[in-house]
Image (cartoon, rainbow, N blue to C red; front, top):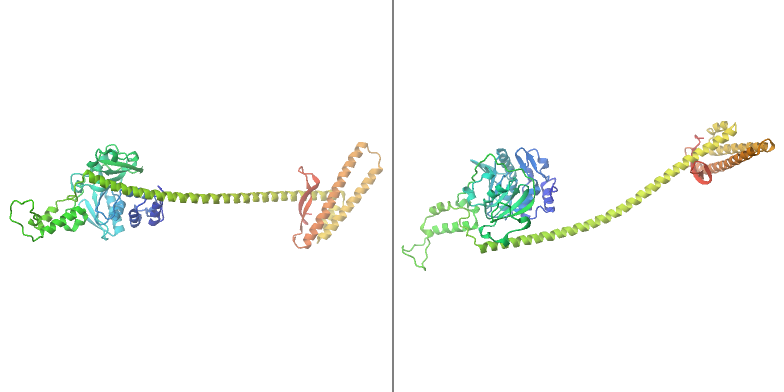
Length: 551
């Protein structure tokens, strides 16, 4: 899956993230499609915006898309909820924008960043993506988006390793925390204290991407609820935390210097921001304010009985209650969770996760079966093409060998014919003059008659020589035998040469008559070839190519 999710545009990149199983949730996929990565990459890297690789320019750094996909899936975000999200080492703001799109307008978003140039790049990127305006308030930059469906994002300048737990919004804790740079185990222990009960933290711890869940104090001592295997707790974490190893990663370390104690400012409640508070707080504040406008006449002050009830809220004016509520935090009216409620909630979460895992398993099995069928088809096609290719290669090799043998036969036959003509020319003083006259012949018929005449002269001279040899008796027996053998060989060669020439001229005369050879070039086929040692044999066929100019 990793490093294979690159695309030419954002849509293609998200399609590959989903194809390789990095993104599995519909709301995460929808957010990745809405937030284009090209708005957040460092300057000068726009052409690589949708490549599945980390990009860095100076202090501005953005991780590979598959890392962000795995981390956001592990956060288990609930769409359109009142979740609070803290991004430690917020960087370019890419993760904050995706999480804000998922959680909806009722959520709270904070980012902590140390470098001024990175904060400037983050604000510019968020403004380009959502058409947002930036409000500065000391060390806090608030990005207000034009779209009412996107919540504000608060970027705080500070060190993420030195966030004060006892002041600001950190007193209540955060529902989700993402760490954008590598930390060690001791630093993880301090950061996990910022989680609210039931909160989830995802981030790189040394060379591992881990997921930490704060289960709460009610889970202490519940050994059966503690995960095992790859979800074993990291060393240094309390018993109220459980951890899970997601994958191996390599991140740049989170900056430790300068040491800046950072306070994340909390919201002061007022009716205009009540939508950022949990449902319990909204219901309680609404009930109090409605009671403050009540016209019910209070009974005289006396000790109430068990059957008497009165509206205590109506005894205070609305302005007083507004002031009181401004001192409450988001979880002021949240009921304390006992062990039974906690276990019920965890059971429901596990059921949901089990159903999701079962659905993912079925989808994976379906993809596996489809891949196996596709592999079988490709194997069959590969075997067929391999057999066809072998046939074609064998045919080409046979054709090449036949062509090479044909050329060799033609070359040898041509040399043999030239040798034969040269031998006849040596026995006849007039042969050279006759060969010179060959170039003047306009037709092969004349050439044939000329060669036949030369052959008849050669035969008559050989007969005369043999007669004179028979009349002479002054030759030794051994010399006579040698001469007879040589004469027999010469006669045999001459007879073979005459027969070959006659056949050659007859065949080529027909080919010229039919108009197939226009260059006075003739081909003789099925002529007796040469033996493997280069000598001629009477029963071996051969092919000769010869032209009138060669003669």
